[in-house]
Picture 1 (cartoon, helix red, strand yellow):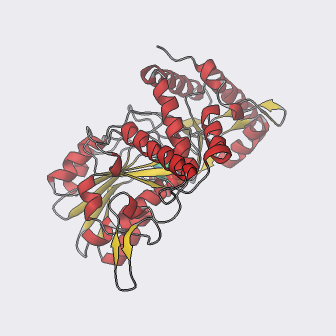
Picture 2 (spheres, rainbow, N blue to C red):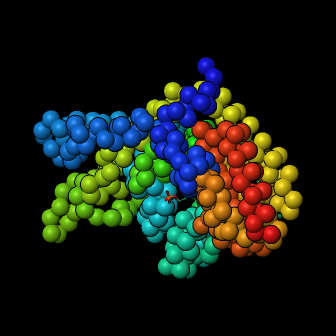
Picture 3 (cartoon, rainbow, N blue to C red):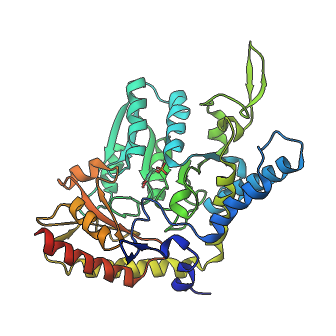
Amino acid sequence: MNFDVERERARFPALHQQVWNKPLTWLDSAATTQKPDVVIDAEAAFYREDNANVHRGVHALSARATQKFEAGRDKIAKFLGAAESREIVLLRGTTEAVNLVANTWGTANVKAGDEIAISGMEHHSNIVPWQMLCQRTGATLRVLPYDDRGVLDLDAARTIIGPKTKLVGCVHVSNALGTVNPVRDLAALAHAQGAVMLVDGAQATAHVPVDVVGMDIDFYAMSGHKVYAPTGIGALYGKAKLLEAMPPWQGGGDMIRSVTFEKTLYAAIPAKFEAGTPNVAGVIALGVALDYLGSLDREAMYAHEDDVLAYGTERLLEIPGLRMVGTAPQKVGVLSFVIDGVHPHDLGTILDRHGIAIRTGHHCAQPVMAHFKIPATARASLGLYNTRADIDRLIDGLLAAIKVLR
Ligand code: PLP
């Protein structure tokens, strides 16, 4: 097998449109990926043929919806390398997954004097829930530093992660820098101190293999929309023994075994954390997106993405006054940069007129911007469907924008 990018591009209908009378060049996959036909069709087919609520009905459609929904959970478990499907909690996405851990595991296990250690390159969704927990409990938030390439300082991590540490949190792949972090090493450091390891996998699932058991991760958060599936669906992987010991968070239907006005007995995992009607179509479509990825030669796909990333880096550096932000040797998917004398927002606006979609701003990682002493970057981010030709269009667009803006 190998990876034929043109064949795969043809499967993503949104890529084949004109914006401002120019062919769309989608370089914003870190914000959200485009969706292949099979995913769009799966979502529509659910509403056309199977639409019913899950887990409660005795009729045929509910049974069918439940079977497909649970098959989606099985596919996510397999994709992440989980030992069992009941270790997969189906949620809105990474943000909700981290908040769930902070509000359940955190409330039960963190007290005044304890420490939570997170990397300095986290997305706000893996910072703010821990700050809120620290405010509630009197625990302290510690930050694991990184260097000016965006490489985590493991020696510093060894001195910060200590007996007071209860949880280590780290982004698997940074959305602002593209760094692939050594989460297996961090997990070993955490476990040596009796702490648990939470990984924000939002940006990783599309670009690197994930193996939660092999990496010995305790909690792994992901978002479907970053991996060619719909928005509003994602998952939290948690080791069964941790999930079982955690109190529930949201109360409601589906998460109970029995309810009286005196007492409620909770359901077993994962239902204990899945109050209310879930995004049934989203789970099924996420399963289809993972099937789609599974049908590809993933090694060849990663090699293709590496090639476009390397080509993009090389070509961007031809632009006078351009500085790459995030130059870690282990890097995927993201080309973040600033250009002397040009504001990233202006660049983004002009590129849009050329049909080129990039992201500009702080990328929900303001501490990363503070580290590099910049307010914002321009970020071109890649999906499996991007090509060297997309990079060439980006460079032409940037050169045209600079002429106008400088
Ligand atoms: N973490 C990282 C690294 C991200 O890039 C994102 C989204 O941009 C998130 C977390 C939040 O994901 P979601 O908005 O899908 O919950």
